[in-house]
Amino acid sequence: MLSYRHAFHAGNFADVLKHSVLTLVLEYMTRKEKGFTYIDSHSGAGMYQLTDEYAQKTGEYKNGIAKILTDDVPEALIPYIELIKTLNEDDELAIYPGSPGIAKQLLRRQDSASLFEIHPTDIAYLSEFCQRWRKANVNQADGYKGVLSLIPPPSRRGVVLIDPPYEIKTDYQKAVDTIVKGYKKFATGTYILWYPVVKRDLVQGMVEQFTNSQIKNLLQVEFCLEADSDEYGMTGTGLFIVNPPWQLKQQLDNILPYLKSSLGNSASFATLTQLIEE
Image (cartoon, rainbow, N blue to C red; front, side, top):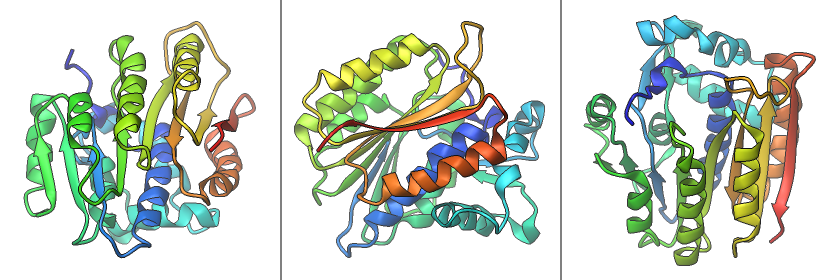
């Protein structure tokens, strides 16, 4: 299925959580001089115009990034907020980066990126976006297979983001399975897996799949706008992070209450769990 377009959802509350964490992880990786590889399994278009018909149709960014684009944010959110401001002139929110856009801002000359996207429209946008990014390799291919084909990277330092659209239920199992297989090949890499909270049993299945694997050091973070529901629609968002930077848990302790108060309501909640110890 190729109907999903992230342009409708760019900059929403789920992106805020996902991309603030991605920013912190990539910044941490740049603290060492040695280069690293960033691998993105479902890259999307790279950059999104919030003024176009897709973003305007849903307006999801208005209840996401638009609400927190201020100077009064927790310290841990500053790198992400400053990155978004850098891309937008005169404090006017018109552009929002996808995960490749975040990576392009943060990666250095010694770092490289491998980006996978299968949607025919988005791969064209992604290729154009990366045209002058010399260390980016863009592939119109299955991202799950792509991740496994590239690890371990030559540098033995790497960050993998798996961010599928979950159009089909098998994506939940397939995404975890890809990380479990990847971990066997490259146990020191950092893996970030995004997921939507649509049906709690699907998320619980991912938790059980991880806990029954050989993976160590797994952090789970979740931010839900509403209580779990059997009705159609995403009530929350979450990330599984394998081998998170040592400061990340403390940084998320800082970020989550702010997101709850700024983007949430009385029914909103956030959780942070060390699912598997080191």
